[in-house]
Structure formats: C-alpha cells, structure tokens
Length: 371
Image 1: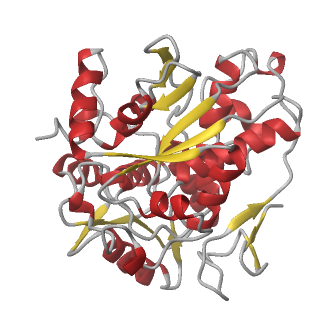
Image 2: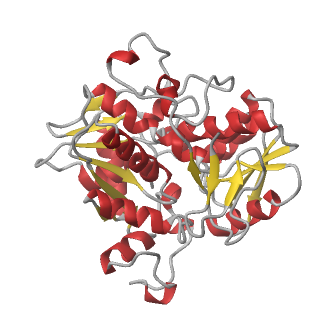
C-alpha cells in the first residue's frame, strides 16, 4: 500500500487520509510505493491507448475516472528537436496526466468536497476529472487568469473562486479551504500522485523512441510538476535497466519570474531570499505572458534544483519578446500553442548539437495570441 512521506523530516501518513501536507513542517508529500511489476516494450502491445497502459508503475490501477488521456503524438520539428503534443489532451493541456490521478484517488476516498488552486490549466483539468468522477469541486484562480480557462472551469460544473492578487495569494486561499474537515485538496503541487501521473510523459517518449530517450528533455518550470515527473520516470527506467543513461533535464522559466533559475546559477540548494534575487522580489503572475509558470516561491524548489543538477541539465530563461516570437513561429509550423507552452521552443528550438524533446503543453485557444 503506498504511503505519504515528507522528504524534509520523514513524517509519514496513510494515503487513505485527507492530510494534504506534512503536519510537522507543512511541506509537500512524496510517495513511497513499490511498482507492481516491470515493463518491456513487447509487453505494451495491444494495451489500452492511454497513460494507463503503464499501470504497473502507477500507484493506482483499474481507473473509472479516465477520459482517455495520454499517448499524445511525438512529432519531429527540426532535425534534432521534436515536440510532444500534450495540448491534444481531453482538457487541452498536459495537466490531465496528473489530474486524472488526483480525481481517481479522491473518488476512492469519497470526500465531502474537492478544492484545487491553479493559474488555469490544472484547474480546468481537475474540474473536468471531478465532473467525470461526480465529485463537487471548487477551483481557486488568481485574478487575471485567462477568461477562456475560467470559462472552461465553470463549464465542467466546478465552483470558481477568483482571488485578488497573485498566484501565491490564490494558493494560500485554497490551502486554508483545504484544512476544513472532509476536504480533499487536489493539489498538483503538494500531492505526489500528480507527479506519478506526469511521469507517464517520459514513459511515452521511451516507448515511441523504441526503448530509448533523447539526449535532453526540456520542460517549462513553475511549480515543477512535469519536471519532477520526468525525473521520477528517468530514474525508474534507469533503475530497471530499460535505459542506459538518463537524459539532461532542461528547465525553462520566463525571465520575468525566474526564482529557480536565479538559485541554480548561484549554486543554491533552495530558493534565494527575495532581496538577493537579481531584480529584487519575484514579480506577480501578470509580469509574464507565461502565466502557467509564473510561480515566485515553488514549494518543491529543493527537489526541482536537485533533479536538474543530478541529470546534468540546466536552467534557461526566455524573454517576453522571445515568447511572442516563439508562439508565432510554432503557429507558422502548424502548432497553435498557448504562451506558457511555447517557452521551451523559445529556449531550445534552435538546438542542432543534440536531440531534445519539448512539450507543447497547452492549446492556443486557452490564451489566444500574445499581444
């Protein structure tokens, strides 16, 4: 049976409880569980065409909440850069990978209510999968969230709470609500089941590339859920002898809100105090077009920095002009992607010296073209 464990102090909790964070330090949980078996390329033939084809390495099995998420196309864009089209998920973003895990877990725990907080995509995904699971859901979003995303959240039947202020204020409001009895906090940051959903991104790459991975995997990083999922998958594949080397993880942030990149460049193991950041305190979500990664103080910062270093990767930042240009460039190539989802293309689209995969994380219909 999987169990929660705090990476900071070793505190444990049962996954059947609604304890959303470590009661000792209030930090996020990791998940301790043993995979039910091992995978091989041959064993995957004829399986369900969704992320649940990798059921042996997932902490949940036999889902009823699925919408057929996963198995998105991997498309070459240049001679060395390929794109994984995660904007083709049921709710039009990669967040479906983790949201289905949270909603399936919540369904089994039968809480009185589900709450989530998001800059948009995680909220739309949790709202959709809670609708699928017939769970009452409230989603907290910051003011300034794309109207297309808030419209989608409401369409799925979730109650929407628009919070004055930035992404951190929104998270604080949701966490206060999460402390109420009978509440399941469907947090893509604090609940590690989400990370075990996002790791399927890399399992799909491994399968589609015939049992190997590219030299590098680039991911946009705010709270780091896709990057940490990628780190989990590469570690698991390597430990099982299914790959002989682990690819470099390339973490991409918007230059305007880049606390992790700043910490990485100084060699720090955690976020820098705000007064030591190069341009002073981290800005609000409105400071960048890449709203989905505008996270000034990500709770899993230590784990993100460690994962990038252990992989031999690095942090890159992109400007607002680069984001605008990248969105138009991808559109000219046939891919209409939201502004957060083009950050990696802006950072590594011109690479020619090694193979790299970028995720196109969200559909352009969610934000429209950047001004």
